[in-house]
Image (tube, rainbow, N blue to C red):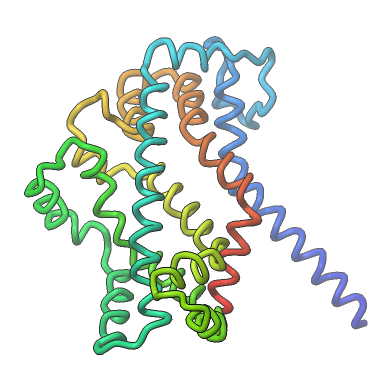
Length: 276
């Protein structure tokens, strides 16, 4: 009886996972299939035709010929690199004192950092825009990226990683004559690289997928990111689902490549911080 229950539980678990995979992966497969269809093929057949006959890559060529998606992808990559670098620097400089130093008001500062996590992004759009406009950064990548440098999640993630490190490392470094900055930069921070990598992946994905804030800040079409370019592409070619699907795959492909190639590093960084 016990073996039968375990077998039934295993079957139900695999059935649930299979259903979940179909729900989440099915739309992506449909978009890929549609992007490979010719203009005379119908992507809305029931049941859907997941393997087009014949398959063609002409839609991808048409996307790049009719719309400057190459520039949009480069803009998104430049903005993502800027966001990753800035968020990593600010988060480490904030998380290290909160984890390894003692100072007055430390708990209050950390509580305020955590409080920022519950604020919806829409609630701070107006003050953020006023600050960006005050510093003359409207229609610049700096105006898009700088407000995101201050990440409550990043500070929390790295603080938890710093807390996992033994105090003896600092004591040994001080005995050898290392100052606080050297301990921070050469002793402690290299040991939390998995968590830093996880933060970098989170930041990259968030920057690449961002739509509302870049839409507010960027006024010039030459500076549009890939999501903005996709939205305007949809406005011009909304009747051609094959072209829309090809453009969508072009936009999400870098995200998939980054996540799949760094998945193990991402999981190690998150689980290490959570254990701390």
